[in-house]
Image (cartoon, rainbow, N blue to C red; front, side, top):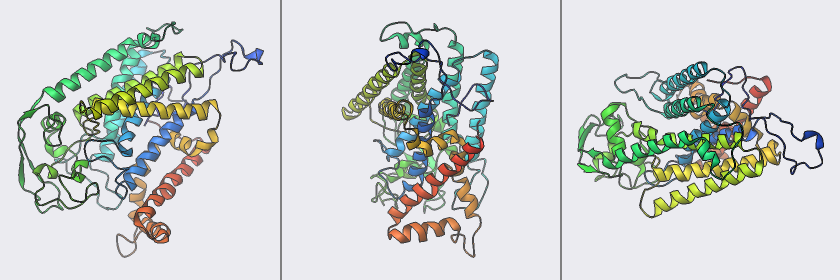
Length: 475
């Protein structure tokens, strides 16, 4: 997702030219004062990790709920994926737009790439593309889903990318002295972040949410076609049925264009099998059957903050010239964000919630992304242990390709389209049953190993071959 570059003819993301500090190599007098361009491999590794995590939590999360999305409040492994995407998109924006010879041309490229992301998002998650275990293809335009993962990334990329272009050249070539100089240098980015947060919080807590009705669209439900009512008439609530995030989406997108399988259906209020999926309780509240858009309008506005934090890390990478300064800044900021988010959550001030993309959620996930990226920067770019993470780096260099083919299940769907006698008698199901589930005599363990080896590792190898051939799918 973060394969964002200014020069379409160059698939490499390069950092600014940086002189090697004499303290790091005191015996090399020839390198003093010289500059050197190199690829920051940790960017690709981090991006590859994010795509791999998405495959893992999407395809194994049903058997392992602790890694799937939290039903409502809380933060499981799957809830880190989207913020990690947005974070690395921010870093890539800073690197790709560090030099802009033509603002008009750069703006056109940002707009074009945004439109491409929206197109692929609608194609993959709007309802056109069938699931891997289904053979139908097409979408009812009355029910098309307008929002999705790539659409959210497109919004954040568009806003932050245009800001980066607009403010390019306003900064001095050298970072002024002072601990806060990097923040002052990109002051307008933080002004935008503050405005985004104020608008989000004002709408989230200030919007009156009336009672509402919906028609059950789940064809597998006994209540299919029924009109159910959800009682609200409140302001500032953050529960599943009566929050402002859902209200804005219902008013703007239309309730028929929202996601039909929100994570809250696995909550204790809806099913006794929580956190697993299961039949609803007889006394389950009506909202358990309702749709909800996890990548909706208001939550996507809040998600811009994750990209702003990511672009700040990219600015640090460009402006600060030595490893220790970069790492000190990143780690302090990462720890601060995580601690702040945890305090907000456990004091009941602002709960961690991916569906609402709350401020505490932004803090914890962005802080975690900062620490993980710092770890990769140390091991890959400083200690030169790049070979340990080559599979992730290969995936990261072809992130869009792996996302489409694996995370969205396009390749598995194609393979499942060829079956013998019965639609479930396919190569994919045979491999799952006889090589993984049957050998371990456990569906949970078998599915987990299948996802790790037959999906993630398989696509890492494919990506490695494509890298060797010099083939990259870029938007």
